[in-house]
Image (cartoon, rainbow, N blue to C red; front, side, top):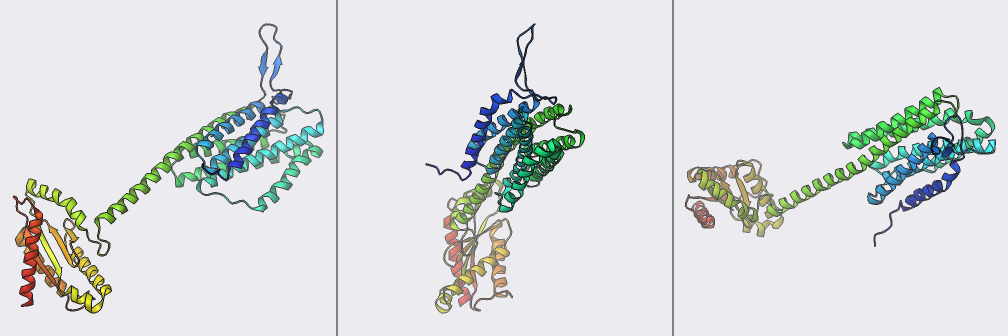
Amino acid sequence: MPRVPRQFWLVSLAAAVIVIMAAAAPYAAKSAGPAGQQALSPINNPIGPAVISIGPRVLAGWAAVVISGLLLLVFLYRRRFFIMLWTVGWAVTGLSMLLASREYGQEFLRWLVYGLSQFLGIVAALLFVLSADAYRTRPRYRREYVLILVPMMLWFALAPTMLQAAAVFAPGHLMIAAALLAAGAGHLLLLRQVRLLGAAVTGAGLIALAIVNAWVAISLPSPDAGGATKALLTSVVLYLITAGGMQLMTFEDMTYELRRTNKRLEHAQTRLRRMVITDPLTGCRNRHFFDEIIGRELQRHRRYGVPLSLLFVDIDRFKTINDTYGHDVGDAVLKQVASFLLSNIREADYVFRWGGDEFLVLLSCTEAEARKRGAALEVAFTGSDARTMPAEVRLSIGCAEVREDAADVMSLVKVADGRMYENKRQAAS
């Protein structure tokens, strides 16, 4: 059974908030005010059936609740922490709007709840700020954050009871605007890391909401002013645009992660492939790779007439070196010989480690040219200034050309091997 994720308690919190708001919905029907405060109140119409009027704050609140519910479903499918922060942020936004939409009998209670709704709006905006950071890495929370939020909550809750809405109306909307602006900028900055269209739409929507809140703080004298309805309806539209961007960003993130996973798999396959076809000590290709490509090279040789020759290379006195100096020196000799061969052949040719101290070179040339190149390699290796190995180390090389009618290349390898030993005997005599 899979382990419950650490952020599961946040899911429970979001679900509890939604249930509480749903239970509070019937009470929101009693709200009324000049800024469209009246919500869900029937209007008697003698001509037709009763018409239900929904206040803009109620509409905005329930829009945020629906968005939160949809994102909660997305989170249950896609367990990413930034989605959880979005979910809680929209739930808190909905709670803030629904609290402000109610009509309270006592003036003290009315301004207390309004101040709390403003504070919740700030908290929701801060959650959106955290969500932008949480996309890249899980944010760390400090105790100082709580020490800042607690006095702020006390001010927004108590100041309106003495100074009415003016104490928290403009400051609250300006703080919400600042937080939303930071959240929008954070989502737009994600474009520098990942090319997600959803991040651009989300960032633009949050910045537009910040502009609306700033306009409300600067242009409207109170929350019940006539322009509040227009601002709230505009916010509902921006809610939907921002939520659409978040949904798009979620699915783009899944695609982006899938692409990254595929790239990691490709790199892993490339490394595995390199390990399978490469000799780990010398870095040359191994016999497995020779068996893999020799058929293709023979086909190219027969079809296009490309000349093909083999050089069989052996290190003289290698057993004596191992016995005298040890296997570490022997391994160093093998590495230096391999490096010499790799640096002195063309990129189109191949160097294979064939056995303990034997190498096979596959060349695209005739036997005469291969013989010249083999002799040149022997001389160049003997006179190399970069040698750091015992002086008695020499190379013996034999060659053989692949004929058009060659049916088995291994027989040619034996021919090149025999010529190598003949060359070794001649050099010893």
